[in-house]
Image (tube, rainbow, N blue to C red; front, side, top):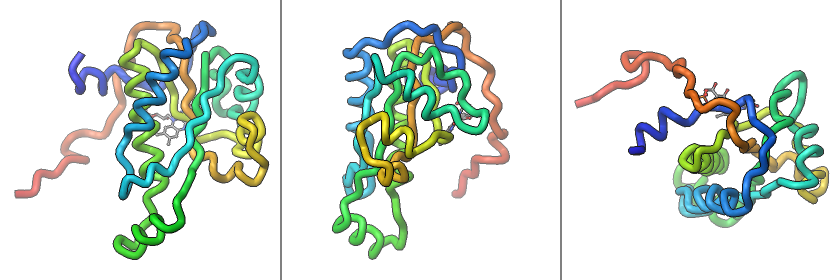
Length: 178
Ligand SMILES: Cc1cc2nc3c(=O)[nH]c(=O)nc-3n(C[C@H](O)[C@H](O)[C@H](O)COP(=O)(O)O)c2cc1C
């Protein structure tokens, strides 16, 4: 599978089988997150890999306001928690007037989602969850709930088929300027 084939194969999986995801697979996925690029190489993240007995509590934490009911059969979750470096962040902000933590974490979660696809697994990036509850599950205090930026649900897919992607057209989104 070349990279664009992988890009087309990755999709948000919302039907998992309940089969466990191995420690080795989770290690491979989290490696892709650790090696993601970040502004000034700040690596402003911590990855909390949740499986086993904590799965049920994690499912409850990401089911909010009617969203994410499908997670019950996920085999694991990775919560990505912001871990900023005040000195580097200040330096970056002075030069760019911007804050890149959310961007960096987005790149890390995407890298892990593609790695999961490459392993034949399904995944779904979750932005809807209770930060407080996720923090409780992973052993952080309530206040750190605001630092939980994204959660990646991972599992074995119920179906091997890939959906047709619904995307804006090339004309609407791509501009070659020369
Ligand atoms: C930052 C972010 C947050 C998301 N949050 C959720 C979520 O809470 N629940 C969910 O089912 N999908 C969530 N998604 C998945 C998107 O709905 C999905 O990526 C989009 O519809 C495109 O579909 P595809 O991933 O299958 O290509 C999220 C995606 C991103 C990038």
